[in-house]
Image (tube, rainbow, N blue to C red; front, side, top):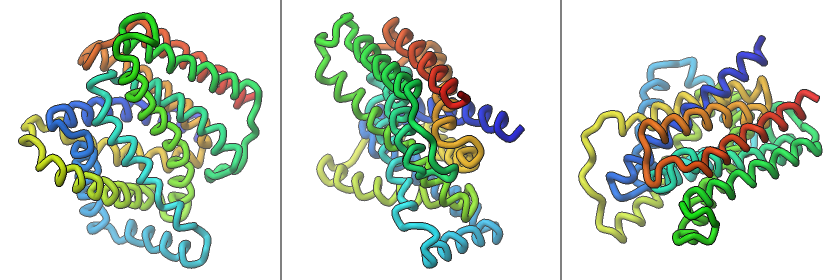
Length: 312
């Protein structure tokens, strides 16, 4: 029962990631500063968590257990740096989504996440231990990389990867591709921390390290640019942090039940479905191209292949 519930939660996590990408992408577009959007998202999430922890002695006890594990060697210091990966991921949302669309962003991030999940599970970095790399899993990774190429073709709008904006397209797709690679590692180390201090302790560590890193980067951006435009008034543009808390905390719990790879695969399904819906209902940039839809479908095939491998 826990396994099936975990699979359902994995899909919900993916859908939340796609919604957050749309929100942070729009906020970054209106501010003209994707790093500022990521900083607001992480900073608001950290503020919410600070209030929650201040009101709960049980949650503060979880932080104490994490500190004790660091002192005893049960946790390594670098396992608390998952928030750096999250910060990069959210920054990519603000920098790329309004140009390439949620679907292309998702397919690229999924490609990196699937390939990285294979490596992370094989190395045993997550709380579930080691998992073997099989031919079917490798085939799934190859399929999803082909899907990324299709997404780039769709972004060019020319049917060829050498279309008029190919250079910009490749760069904008590579950014979320790298973000996806880092997400699998983030989920693994967060699972380790969550096993000691609980899901919200791991989430607090993520938002603290991510906010600190983004604040440093944004300070440099502001010095160079002299500031950004006025803050938009639409309340929904500031929900990214709250959404981030929900899916990071949920992922910390779920990764202990189903492992890094299956968490990645189920969240992929949720991301893809939500991203296509968002690009139809609230399109951005070039909208939703037929090549991107094909790439999305091919990614579903890759997920099915890898899931079959997992159960084999």
